[in-house]
Image (cartoon, rainbow, N blue to C red; front, side, top):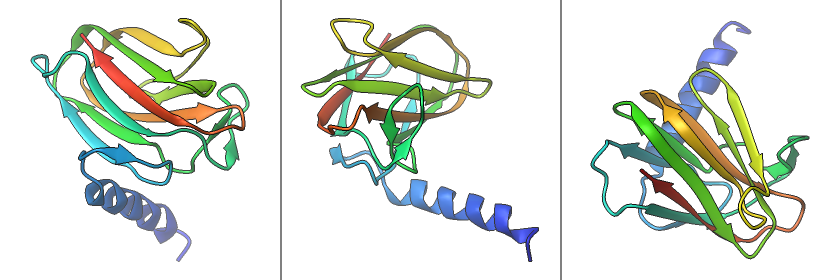
Length: 141
């Protein structure tokens, strides 16, 4: 029975991801699935939501138990930039195929990550320091 728990949890996460498709505003309990190719439009590509959650992540503030967004990159991006705009003091946490990245207060108190991004799945949280707020996350090539 205990051997099936990780498989069951993974299946539930995949079902939750498949349930929420990109179609507007998402709160911190929803997961939006986004697929990007090198010719995405508009550029920058905006998605919106509400920051924060109940889990304290130490370096990236409060986040929800599930990522705000799951992003599938269909190809390599030599220079992809993710940045957030919000009235709240937000953070940006990304689990890449190979590492965990956290950004806070890079550009006028807003988080930003940029660089080379390889194909694969990326899990993205927009966190905060205890005061949640609406945000817009942009993907800029």
